Image (cartoon, rainbow, N blue to C red; front, side, top):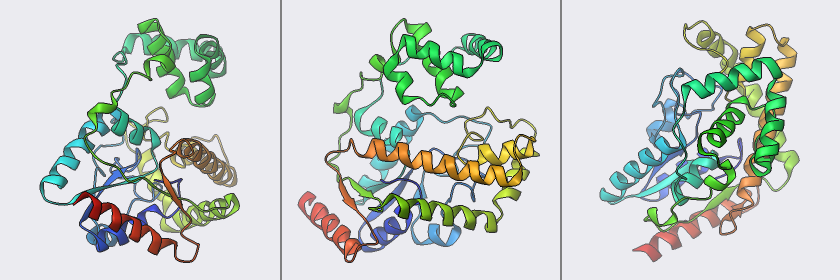
Length: 304
């Protein structure tokens, strides 16, 4: 696990080459086909060295839920284990990790009619006002949901109105017994925030050189894709899309994308600090990579 741009993929590939492991991607953006550069999807050479499961599953017009991820990941883990190998789950979508290990609460199914009603309210009053409604109904959920995240605001209000209960209460109803694996949690993260921010900046500049803007232009030209889709709301894509829609200048979308990526990393770190049984590594420190390999070797040997 780790925040964006922390070096998870590189370490995971080395682990696969050292041990009988197989990678399962834990990333809500990598599931989308045609979104390769802006998601930092592993390239063909990397995938040849270390194949990844659960990437390129969906077209960008489709949605993919934490429940679907849990089902897909458990199926992949069973296949890997049956083949005598060990699953290595790699990514930064913390909700997916939580859903996988602790199960999912029994939330009501989506209601297209209610969602349309909430969107109509947002058009009239603005999403900030609806976020205030959420704060009054469920302060705990509102504190976790960004006022600029209409998708999650809508879902939270939908759940509350359908169930008559707080979303934060329902989400505490998972089933930890449903995860039949022993776990070693490794967090890859630079010790200094400034180092992580510099890595984010350098990776974004590399994405631009690789053709990120052209990738988004191709998506923008496709019928059926729009800014409200979960895929297009991914960090970086949302800001580039806004530039193509005339909302931002080129310089402005670049700065907004970087700011959004830093905010994503901050949210990921907030989640990760709650993982009290995780072992943290800064790969820039001398011997850090060797220490990771040693703890993995010990874990695998203790399981045998």
